Length: 235
Image (cartoon, rainbow, N blue to C red; front, side, top):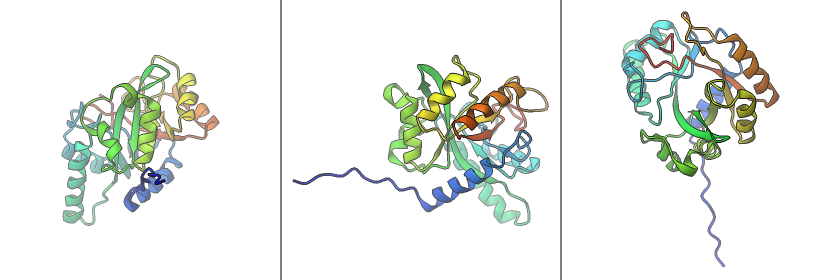
């Protein structure tokens, strides 16, 4: 009898290298890391942001970012344009400090019967199972379940993070353990819930999320969740 084996998905060396670098950076993040050193949550005109990818790149360089990720909703179009812009700048400005750009995406999902957002990073965009989540539309039914989203991101060689865990109908105390049980890699610990100016992470929520992330051995990430025209703020 011939037994058909499921294909083994192997991430590319570039994906593995990017994931390793990302893990190393996440281990060093603190409350002052964002928005002027690192930013792992921002949007462009490719989804619901106001910044054109080229403008976002220009602001990232002007700010002096060391690394960042563009996490448009259900698309990597903005990332692709920004990546091309960065490559051009590397050629034309060889002595300019160019930040590292990680591939990212923000995906709508269901966790404990609650709508949440899951951020994906350092994945292989050509992975066949991931394509459903990169078509500009929120997933439905089983594909929208957090367990499925996290599993697909992992199969694509990526990392999964629960975005702004204190913004949902259910508490972070409920959602973070549930996400951890599904294999999520991190939580967005440093987040400005009240959109302050200048940007700074919300102290009470940060403390709560970090306590939970430590309990479940999760990474703490940071991001402005920029939707407006200034990369230093959310709106």
